[in-house]
Length: 190
Image (cartoon, rainbow, N blue to C red):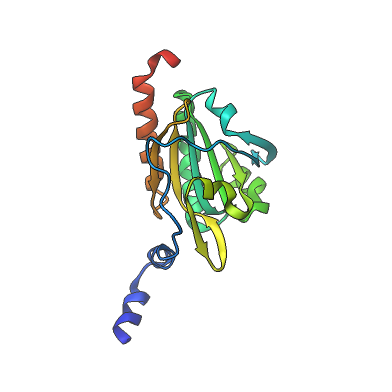
């Protein structure tokens, strides 16, 4: 028992959180090539209320849809900052970024302004209903939350990237690579 206690004590907070939530992952995310379920959610952009429609966003180009567990949690804040920094690069490739969360949904307006830095919209998914359609939910402290999963969706609704990882810093690189690949193979869409 003492060895286990020393092992856990030596883990970083992030690693301990990742280990503690891994066992509660509910299902595997939708795979590459699947059709992305359409949805419309209420959210915020730069602190102002918006209605986000996947169907409407796909008319402009690919969509980077990323699910995160809860607004203002440590990992989700890191991820929001990274997506905010990358939003202009995504925009140059006609890609729309949208963050969706089932946790702390009453705080998405403030989160969009402070942590998303007014760069991209974030939407509330009370009860993780949309996350469930995308098969990216987890249980934490008796609540169903959206798991940390990123998708890149082509304008025709096909999923080009499906990536689940507790490390918030890896999602931007994966999403950017998928959008660049799509962009380079579809130059006529610009």
